[in-house]
Length: 371
Image (cartoon, helix red, strand yellow):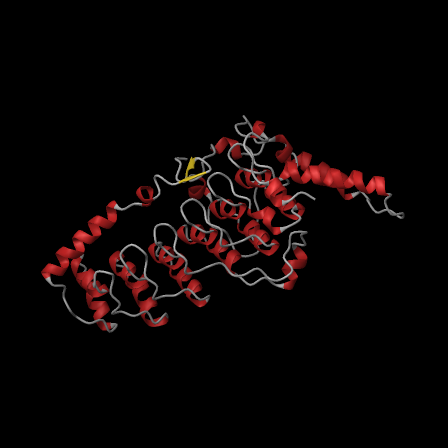
């Protein structure tokens, strides 16, 4: 059995899959259906998320007649019987073992962009092929292989809004803490796009029934750990910050109920979720955070500004009055402090992630290479 590192993405392998005029035929002929109904809820439309991918739309469309071919193959495979009354001889065992190893090497070897067949199946939307490849993986580490953009299959499933596949990967043991080149976990991506189905798929506890349903050779012996809710991405934002910025109250309540820290500050200027809601002028979100989530209405940023002061600075008098009714101290910002905070904010805007990591290289390649 090869080591996981032997199956890691290598440059130049499976080069014929990179820019096909149509989706790869070996994937297309196995795909039963390009869509699915999630058992975790109706996923949001993946159209805006797919625009973030670097693959043209026509490369993700299934060829005509694919469903008919898939049904025929399904009927033929259903009639197969591979049970043997006699055990394999040593020679036969070696033959099947070598074929199995060769199949693993082909399935999980990356192309010039580091994309394995599993990455490509997710990108093209071939759900059944993706599920088969997940089941084929002999160890969870095979599900965590990253392409040159540091995306795991779980990142791509979240980007394309494939909630059921996200759940399959989680149950099979995929690591929910892996980060892409922007420091985002799959949960960051789902929260940023307010995808309820994917968020539920990533955060729900794994049940014994699910383990049986998704029976995979890669399934971990113990339940996978929950995704990190309070970790920052490289912009200094947690999943809760992204949900607040998206203005989704249901998602915010879900994250807080699962342990997200409502008082956690973002990494650039020290704003809490309440500060972000105040700056956005979202009165409903402010009430949810202050009343239901017990957020501190008098918390201050790194520069010493409270949510009440930020509301006044942004000329949002109604927001400031609401904060006062919620218990905020009615203290206006001194003119000197306002000037200092403006200078600090300006400096922070100039200090972008691209500037911080522009000179960092991994394996001779820029860490933040342009897509």
